[in-house]
Length: 478
Ligand SMILES: [Zn+2]
Image 1 (cartoon, rainbow, N blue to C red):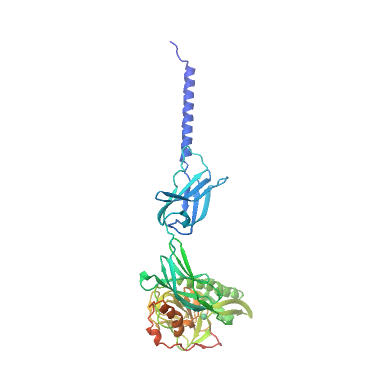
Image 2: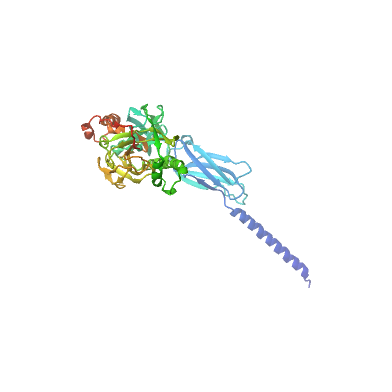
């Protein structure tokens, strides 16, 4: 009997063991290679529509090996269209951001639903390919029809620091309005809903050039735009300038109220504290006014001309440019956006027209403030009050008492600071104190467009022009 020598059997076992380990090692290695995740894709924001021109931003992230290639396709039934394709040159990065604009009409597909597919390949070798399937599928709607837009009527003559109205018909749009020199004034549906009639209150800031374009715009969900030029002319207005002397005693008395976070301010820091109030706190208040402008009713609450408090004298005008003097030096310049109306101390403050209280409380330099919304973006502001008698959300009638005049905020004497705002842009109150102005600039375009938005009965009975506010220059409470 011939036996395998003991040493030979041992070698055979060793070889088998090494081979097995090698096979297990190779399989594990290949398994790991295969298990490394492929490319991840994200479209931010996820597009729900593709319109005539749609921007897309695609972010691709590779786990290993860097990004080598990507393709975006649009699939509709059996049709597949490549929207973009890119091969990335080495060295391959693990993250790529692709921004592209898709020209919807160039795709050659019909309007309706489709699926956006993203394919991508990394530079990492795997035993089995993983890049032949889409890594992202996004259902979208292809919409290649821009909204229909027709200008019906508009205020013929606008003015710097003034307002107006544009009436138009828009269909198939979800955002419509008028752009005045870069500021967007949203429109609101008026009349029967199927007619598509809209009205937009517009304003021209006091310092906008006369050539500022006035453009009617409509945009649908797919981002398709329609625009029409509005043939309104902007007339120039002159605005006054004034100098305001800031007294040390005034600051000593007022700063604890205006800068409560600062405590007492030493004499050497009075100027710097005043500038914080006059610049930063003023800017905060202006921002709050703009934010509050969004809280407007989609229908007009006002009727006829706006009330002016009785027996008041104008102590400061709209859009007055003020130089502030302190210890004999010009230290700051700011624009005053309202009318300062002075009467006896703690006079009743009437609501200029029917509206809803959207703000009632302290507002930095404006002190105790009430902001009334009259609908369609038109609002009035009452500042420096000594007392507020209304609450946020309360509806008030024309002439209702909102509170009493006072000296709260940056005010040197008892007066009412009164402002008219259109979507947060301050305009001169003079226009809406004047029934004839309202008739010619607001009611006329409505009549021309055949829209019964505001009951005119009231306005016809009112005097054509209320007496102009009496001017008093000095001494001037602020
Ligand atoms: Zn004022």
